[in-house]
Length: 460
Ligand code: HEM
Image 1: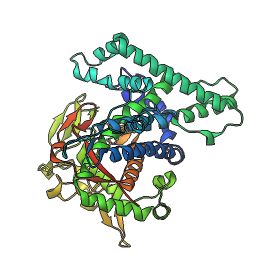
Image 2: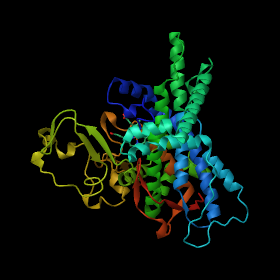
Image 3: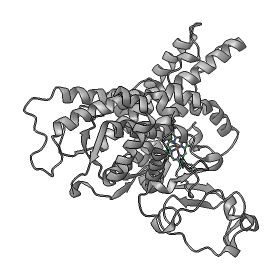
Image 4: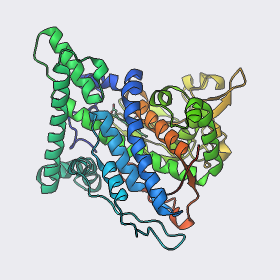
């Protein structure tokens, strides 16, 4: 899917030395320090813009629902761009400005169940270019010629070619700005504001120590940084859209979540403010973690994970020859539907030897797997306090093992901060049935076809 757009990134590589070297290069962008000190403040600032935008829309909509899909997509592009490059595309600010300047006679809708319709500001050129290149993966997905068609399109379709040029110029500008910042002898790692800054700062400091010129601009660095956008915007945006739908449908869960957040962030509640970035990155709310896992479980953002059998193997009595592509779906039996029957004698001897209490994950209540129930992720600890149990059931939304999702910690941080700020600021009110289809479409990820929200700002 990504080999045409980021041929030098870890995502498209076999598990070899080059893959390990790329993973090492990027490792600290998922460290607790980076997530707390760099990513969380960027996310809070980006999601503040989203709240401003939705406050304007809620006011103008006068009790009508409005389509959230485009706003969520745009906000998640700006979010991941701020973390990767320390610079947003300006798309949300353009939308806010447009709404502030609407004529006084603006009428969002007339009929009570109709959605409010808003004009859209033109996309900034850089937003257009980055998303055009990102979505171009679909050319390969839909074509019988796959990646070859995609590579041809990137090179020869004039609009796509232009988009690639704008993307490359944007990355060059960001890398040079970082180099300028860290080439200053006064600069330190405290000045890091993005993944781009972190990678360049490390290289500049190392080169200075070794008495050589820094090599901060390479195809690997460029592709890994652009890879943040490719791997990170559609996945988190899709999860957020499912989350908006589930929390709208389950008003009781939404209220319980709001109460739980208010009791975790007591100071923010007392001050009448949104929680601080550092607090959202470090203080845990078990019920929020449970809600997010439940959204991921039923939202099925990534439809499945693929592995290649590296040797002949026997699995539950079936022979799988070396070289076979093995697809493990992220929905269906054991995950979102009752498990299939497995003849225990067909399991491997080592598997049979594991006692139920020593298993890697527990088993959820198998009769309710199709239902949205965050409680399945909670249990009481020895002190009688409620805690989140990440191993309550066999989840693999982020894959697993060596090739599991590199960005998982960042994705979970984004989801935590987004839903904390959203539920703190708005009530998601029920939307009319005709705006609440649960049909999905499978493009790069599994997305709802319709996501409407009807928002009422919260008072506390
Ligand atoms: C809700 C959001 C996300 C979901 C559901 C998700 C899911 C996945 C899945 C299923 C895989 C394949 C894992 C496997 O085969 O075992 C993967 C790989 C990957 N993800 Fe994510 N992801 C998300 C967000 C992100 C973000 C924000 C980043 C940003 C850096 C990211 C970066 C990557 C990379 C680089 C890989 C490839 C790792 C490799 O090949 O070694 N992901 N992701």
